[in-house]
Length: 377
Image (cartoon, rainbow, N blue to C red; front, side):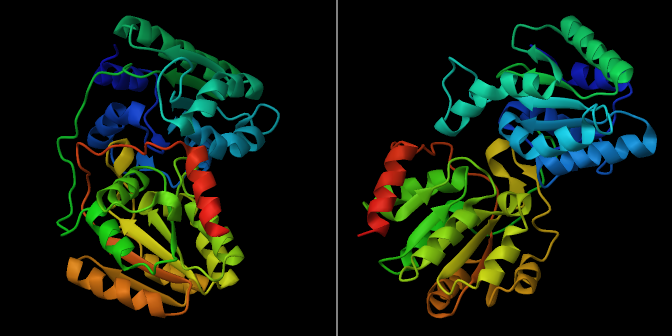
């Protein structure tokens, strides 16, 4: 097992001191450590992994120094284009160190959305011509230092990206000592419960990846309600709003609720412009904003530092609201049923979830088939 502090110090020893990326559950100790030991100018949580590749490239162009980009292996999809058309040897030949959490590792139990990505992670790096090393729980600090040095030498000599693929339990545990919290009244689960309780009977919901979908599933169980009205987006972070848009445009007789998160919204913010310009009257965009990537360690987003309502309004949303109390939410949940969409309702909530929060007991295929059947009844 690798001690996070030792790993960080070895990066510094190899002149790597700029960090950017999207947090991952397998890298949460690393992300927590650099948050508390690196200035905000040198550790930027990017909107998506492709943006992080761009940031790392810009840093190298300006400083001649190598940046580190952290991501879950699912983020390789977002990073693919800039890795191929920007960093690759055949284009600008820009070195950067990729730290990739290996979710869905073959022959290891994981959630269904990680299975395919886990199988193709190494193949993807090989296809891209990116050299890599795999770090796991049996590696010691001395071996880790040799691998980091090897990576640094390769990047310097070849002006090319290099990847360290991180298996589960590679890093020791590190908890944030100064974890920022916001004193809002509601939890995300309480907010979702109010929203779905006020939906019209034939309305459908599309929930974003992570805790929101898990909570929606359990709330339906709690109230003994049918799951067929919900599409649980267990993967493809940031795309729930476009899934919901496709449904809304094709099923104009049903109100479509997109239960989104601040991290997911930021990841593909351009989706707001498409929704606004398509003008779906039956679209209800519910933004659950806790200012954090809650599913992967609670790393901060800029969710509380931007005006999501102004952005949505500028993109063509008809009405935009924000609230942070149960009383306000109850009132607005009733109001948005009777206004022309697209509508954005931002709900500011506190971080965290129940420790006993379960996962959907249905498979993604079962969810899809039940949802499609409901839409076409």
